[in-house]
Amino acid sequence: VLLKAISHAVQRIRGIENTCYRMGGDEFVIVVPPEHYENFEQIVENIRKIFEKPWFLKDADYYCTMSMGIVTFPDLGDSVADLIKKADIAMYESKKAGKNRVSNYTLEIGSLSGRRLDMEKNMREATAKGNQEFEIFFQPIMDIRGEKPKCTGAEALIRWNSTELGFISPAEFIPILEESGLIIPVGKWVLNQAMATCKKCREFVPEFRVNVNISYIQVLKSNVLEEIVKGLDRHKLGADGIVIELTESGFLESNAYLIRFCNGLKERGIPLALDDFGTGYSNFHYLYNLNLNTIKIDRSFTMLALQNTFEHNLLQHMSDMVHDSDIKLCVEGIETKEQVDILRKTKAEMIQGYYFGKPVPKEEFYDRFMTEE
Image 1 (tube, helix red, strand yellow):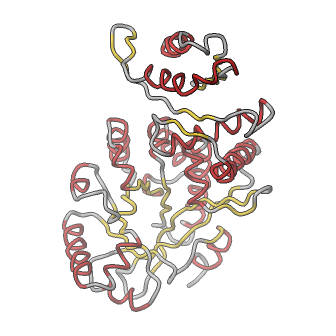
Image 2: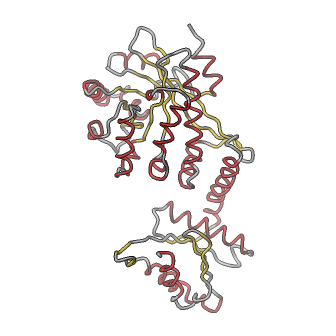
Image 3: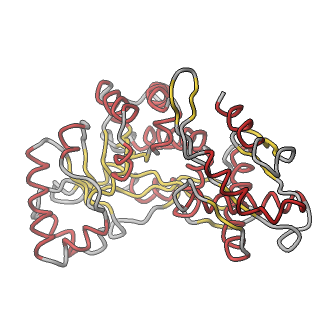
């Protein structure tokens, strides 16, 4: 109903009455004919005005934002396919800048966003072929409560070595996975790989657990809780075989879906960890309202805490308070023995960082951490 209403509104704008096209989904292409090009800016403004007011649909008002990308012919392209691709690149810039904007295509954004489109294209091909280009690396999580640190868990981290583009940084491709919705099938695959690895590691360390990052997109747009439960049953793991990690920035989007997901984890006994704690968003309100089992101190805060008195005292206070709340504390970013010794004086239970090991493929992880006496 909304799409039809938008179509009728756009078609009433003078100059583009017969040159509006729906490409699929919620994407439209509008061609401004040469004879109306002198009114181009007014046409763009008229389109923007359409979305300033609510849409009255089925007895209620709905607000809808619009992101637009503009490309001109013939100076920036001479074929329909090329022009649409460049308009799409410009539209992506509008979305990246905060949506509800208009962006013009330039050669500068073309070189940057063109790579983004290439990555998405290759990513879709990779997922269609069974995720063969993706691999899960594992970084050890060490329990430091005993005399000698012991590897009792690992964080599963996805890596992508594209046949066409080479190795792509997770910081570059994971946002595209989320924006494109591919995080849902790829995330399901990651869960399965992590559980299979946990099952094997428990042959050596019975209490072993694998931490898996779950995107807010997975919570919002898929039945990820059901997939977690079914996966644990399929791999014959207890509820504590997997620790679900949510980043604290994800809690900015806190809503009924997220609360329901966290409550669902608690009901089933599946541990929940808050990742990246200390990056500036969260507060201790989450400790008491989201049923957390673990808090992971972000590497950036760890570095400050190990160098400055104020942050060190704050970390000490946090570890005391978390410990009293029956929540485990994992400190990330540990790189030296001196840092380990400092943290042993706090109530932190777990450590993760390059001092004990970088993320490595599962076979290398097995050889190093699961076969030692």
